Image 1: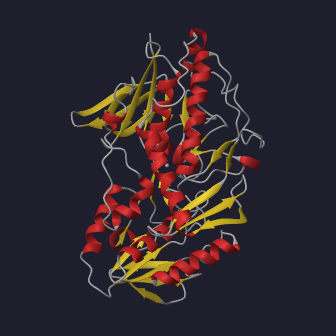
Image 2 (image 1 turned 60 degrees about the vertical axis):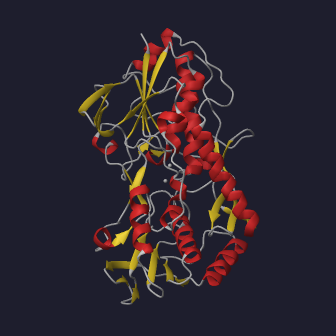
Image 3 (image 1 turned 180 degrees about the vertical axis):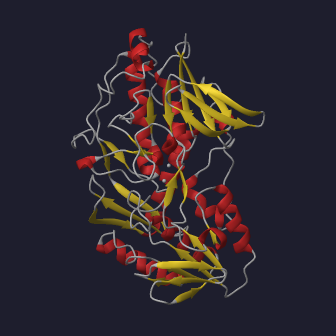
Length: 435
């Protein structure tokens, strides 16, 4: 009997897990099902580009996974019962249920209005394709001189405001940030970011806490306001509420707590990757919500699942950061080099070369997802004893690599493109936040 693996979510992390499992395990031994609400893979790191009118080529998931042995199910996940090991979904044919032996939870995150009055009613967001397309339509209807305000000084906000200002130099574009502009960057990085904002005509309101959004303005804690025909909200993300409704151990924000192999610390037949997971990297520091974190987490999880099913060696590679890649419009970029635990160092790459680097990273990430079978293929037979242990929900989560494994040569490097903003579970991050 085949071991049933269900992957929930086909963003960067979920799609990479499914593809990597297809390369690691034999189809006669396992049945891998990928469940996603949309039929296409969405390049979430490019939503600011979509919002200003740039076209993104469609990437149908059925074409990407054709011939891989992965079964695609286009459906919306409505619940997970970790005791019965079942997932409830709704698709074009109605509600249904999928049983699993191993579950990989990669449902990601959505925008977070932070409970600020007026945000849900008046603000736009670019956490996904529908929101970006709505903003695109609204921006296209603006006339010269009308004000656009981006709220949030993290990576998503910085990328959005510079993209809008470059694409629409006729508009009055402003950024409202709770902290200083780019205060998480090195001195060189901060200086370059400020220089680009000045050149693009972006008005920056620093150390300004937003208390409300109205149809024509944004209000701040000091009693002031900033005119806004359009407000773009980029102050953080919230994970899907499904995990919180289960018996899984989650954080107070609903992220699934995992060990260093991305395995749930409470339910050994469940793994979590991407924004949905609370994982730790170098020094035990939580990994930020980002594509840069999500893809290596996916590698780790897929390798761990395969190792446990085949009796192989568990991955014990620590996850460490290398840089933060920031686009500042199409012609400018900023690559901030960081320590393994994501603290900025002096070095930074700027200008057109940085923009080209960032574009290469984005293309590389999408290309890797779109070609799941390319790369080394080491399909090993499943060991039946391992299957029995993996399928037993009462089994201990060990053996597994220790959470927050120490730094080491050969670490998985966390680099690439942010899917926005902020330190983990932050409201107006100065570093990036989902995958």
